[in-house]
Length: 631
Image 1: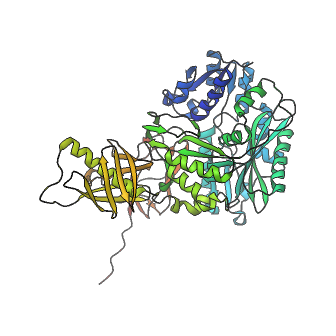
Image 2 (image 1 turned 90 degrees about the horizontal axis):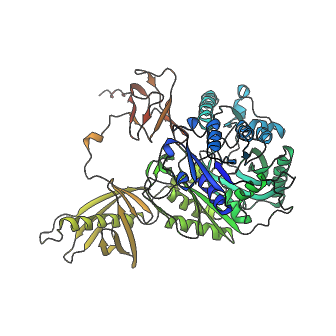
Image 3 (image 1 turned 45 degrees about the horizontal axis):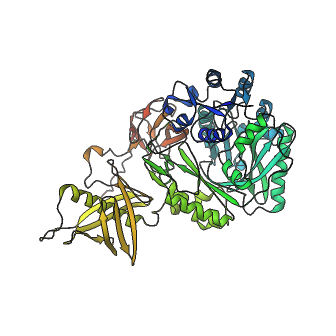
């Protein structure tokens, strides 16, 4: 029997495993990097062991250090979570050789399936030879052989880009997974991403726990997942389940695993088998009424699964809440999570709590919110409303995008679920959410009330010009104009049609079109204002000259580390618009910085290994001046 378990991971998945361990009476051990010293998973564990350093390669990817930590803490089992070393056969063997119980499939099964290239070979599917890719093969997908989560993946549409994308994907995969192997496969445009959850014991029983649809993705990383996958023809669904079971039996699989497919034109294309628990496993748990982590532990202890797979019930949907700005190329965000409060009736899986800091070293996912309902329509409505009511004070997040996605007709009706959803709809989904304008009015009046409380003042016999405040938020800026009234209140002159019912520094009531709404307002010293579910930024009245930058300046779009500079790039070089100049790594994703226009590189402040803050000057490109027309 397992009595003490170490989780060789961090954040949300570590906390999720610890939760089941508490229910089972199993004590827990966390490992943590220096960047995670105060993290929630460390606080929730019964014991914790430091892994010196901050980068994954120094800490969570060091299997030798993790096994030493398990032995030092008296653990008798290791759960790998997902990512990092979860699909590393050598790590699994090291755990087993140390006399510890490995919560996962046999190392031989990991070797057969964890490498996407070997998995395809096992099923008789040959990847493309990179040296022989022709124009007729395009588009193709460059993909990391190990790991997942969208890292080490690149779509190539121009043959001339293939070599560079192979190099870039390999570098990112090596950084994220410790394995730089990549391969090339045909890229199926706008297919559905459907997967099958498996659970197998050591006695030959294989459960196929239905399907999941994970088609809503950005940068090949999932955003919204659901179970069961809606609208699949019965024959196709049966084929997916049968293929998944055959794959598991072919390698003697034991434990939890997932087989992934891309469905297009009524056909299923095998993608990979993930020999671990998936991030989106909660939707399957909610539909089938099981605890997959508890079952993983039971299987590792030698338990035999019942012969019949549990019966499904209802529908579940999960949304991944990320610290990122979808309107700015999904740029990851960092900073203090001042308040994080999720309404009741929602399953919350997270590695953060109010007051925690979101740093640059790891994935930007804050949490997963999952709901279950008797029908898909009910689940969609329930999750959208729960996200609206969630209070998140801190960095920019994708919360508004999630709400808009759930309510978009293509998703809400399941009429068009495919991986091209955000390519088609992102501009419309990142416009100002409903209520953003009155929220800006509430922010302005709350600020005015706070100033009045501190300094006095108000209505004057000699009427002065309106006060003006501008707030930025999703979808652009909102200008508010108002003036104090004789009775101590306020009159809003822009936008039109707003009557002030009451105004205080923390709560404002407004009437529009005969309907009174109340807004809770929280303002922070950095100019961020949270009004209900809206995140606004107070714009300065005058531009600070120190914030002005020279034309052609390339500023860091996010905090991160410079990992590469284009080969041979030097000051004085001629560059062309869109030419890659350097690469930043932030939150386990690589971000390319390109020349904004054709011109001359007049400054280069980036060097590999340099850590930069958001807004740091990386380079300057002086654009080519057009000769003036002859008069």
